[in-house]
Length: 488
Image 1: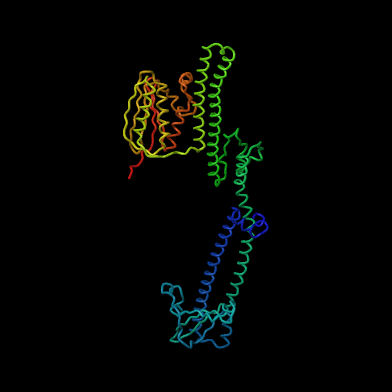
Image 2: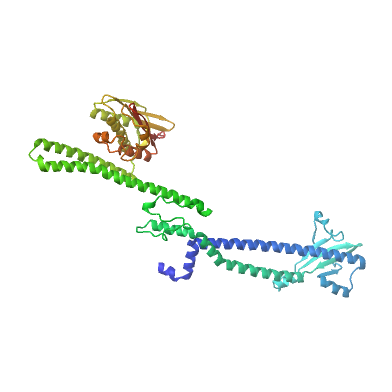
């Protein structure tokens, strides 16, 4: 199919016209200039016709004055009169025509103002276009001293001159139209060169390998030396052509997002490696301990087994959380949406928590609210909030789960009487692997991924997270979700 298109010049030209922005803009400029010339030609034609009519009126007025003084011209005088493209005769029949509006009659000679005008347009059969123009005449029937006269104006010479002038103008316009096609194409290509260079740079940035400064120039040289190691480079919007400032700003915004994503990925890989390195080191240490002394020492053997089992469980939980976030980042996790009562789900999670944790007091304030959501993910997010409260709340203190609703949103909140979060740490609590107290987090088995997972779940359901905390008083973390519309 491609070979056929390339072998057919007309198909290639059609492809260029259809898909090349240079051809499209050139065609638009051609049409605009053609339309401009057409309008100017029409105006020139109207002005020329108006000029001929004015000249005919002036000639008729002069002829009327001669009629008052000398009467009808003799045959010899008539021959001389034709040099002015005018003829005078007695009408043989009543002239049918039109009158000049009274508003305009004041601008005409009193001798001809009230006369009847008509155009003589002969039958063009047997005549060419030039022959028709040669036979056109402007007639005026007037009365002078109770006698009727027919004054005719024959603009043959004027029409011939105007036709020659129009022919020269049309030829000049055609030359300008077709000569400008190539010059317009060059102008458009020069104007669009920054976009072309920018596209080449974007293509180079999407491929691997080393980049030279020449390969990375775009937008008149403003985009230069941008790669994964220099994603903080930006296009200078102020020095860019005005037509491309919006594009430059959009690319800067895109680079901001790419840079942030790249840095987040680097931090994520680094933090994940660090989190996995610790349990692996512990397991390796106990394995070496068993290899050296634990084979015959039951106490050392049991201690090593318990530690390896604990670290393996922690590692398994961490890997599962990492996989969850990875699937979420890749948008490969499908939500199983259903309508359910959020208070019933919270009561279920609270009941399960009471069964496994007897060291805290639990309370609830549940308002019946229905939502449309993935029940399993909302339950997981609720457990994350309660697990956090359990880890950072001293034994015997109270943990309260509440559900309220207002303005189309419901707040699922878990409030504890724990150690609280420092004000400077609040903006970071939803960052992956962030922990306010590293030593305490290791003791409680925290990985710093619980709250980021809860935040992701809330946002995927069109909601968000809210945190209120005071040191040594407690923390309240809320999942804000849209309330489901009432069922029909």
